[in-house]
Length: 612
Image (cartoon, rainbow, N blue to C red; front, side, top):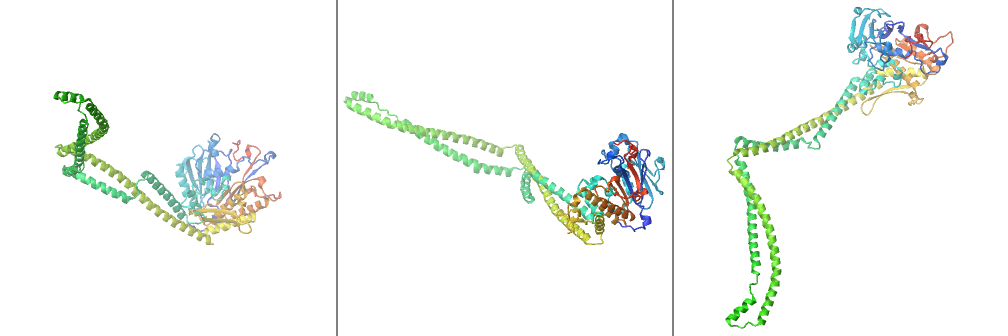
């Protein structure tokens, strides 16, 4: 943190504060000249019918929004100036700000051309440059982003570096929406990494450790996501680089062998391999099948012969004629015996013949199968012999080249897989290293928070003391401002009311007390940074709302005491929220009321026009 020597109160009190807000149309928007200490925007509800209304649209809240506009808030279509462009397009606003060196800068910003900014530095306060020619401005039509950088350098709030001046401006221009949480402003709706390091910094902690921890966390998540993507791309394939390298080695050896054959145009090695396959496999099978076919053919001949032998060639009638011619008597009885014998033998022969026919059919089927396989093997043998005896080497070259292409495609796929695996292994190494570094950073953050909590002289200890003093003075109840490191290594900021036993209560959850805690935090923060180049103003809208009269008096006393320390306070309120006083004892001095609003016509509004 940059520390500057603390100036004397007379020189210090007027610095780094809004000094004047005015417009190019003073009849519609009267100039607001801010005092270095207490500035009150008071809205009087004079019409009885308006006293019970929640909102009155007089413009007390609008003043804070205009200050933010002058401090170069980004253009938002919901912002009232742009939402009602038909009403405000011809307005040009001027914000005079007192600087660290005691001089002033006036920022000119129009509604019609809100991204073109003009600047002028000057010595005297409460100037009116609404009619100043362009040539007399120091910088004219500065582009918006460049204008913010220029204003950042002019304000020179070194205590918030390396952050931009707008980063924490919401703590000192609290809108109603910003009273919902002590620490997380409405504009901090994005990730905690965007605002927690800044808040830690202005509370006195080592913000660099926290920023680095978030960065490591983001880097770790990115690496883990990449590792997951690669695992999905691998789709269950090998994730071990050693195994992939082994497969690549074998494939490359095979490629080298085939490439050498092609380079030498020598196919003897391949011929030898094919010849061995021919001899060992094809010829042996053909020989076996030929032997089987020979055996089957022999059996087939035997079956056919047996079928022919079973025919009975003896005819009794022929035998009778033969015996007659020979003069031998062949009686009828002998003829009948021969016929009976023939009938018996025929019965036996028919049964045996059935078996032989069945056997021949089986032999025929097997012979058909054997012949088919022999034909196939013969064709294959012819092709292999053709390869061996071919004089056309190009055919062999073509075959080996095709095999080589396939192998190289396999190698390319394995190399791609190895690349994924190597990236995955490197990511795993990075993840382990990042996780270890994140753990070390978390330990360092925990040590830093513990040390700052234990050091009664630390910036954070002073802030929490001032915070408790304010709350206790207003509501007679202690409040604890604490910062702890959660299990993820992130800072958790807490602002809690304590009961008599020192235990946190739920009272801070009510809106009125939540607002009080916000006000107390802002003032404590400003007081703790009085010795630094840091803002010294706070705008609080509806400061007394929902508090009882005694607490209002107490809070006003705190605000006056803090303005006495050099902190400019700009507060808005409705007259019904004023603490009761005697008529001869007004709550505010006339000089403290910088804007007086009322509900008796348009002239009582901040903008002297109909409500929008």
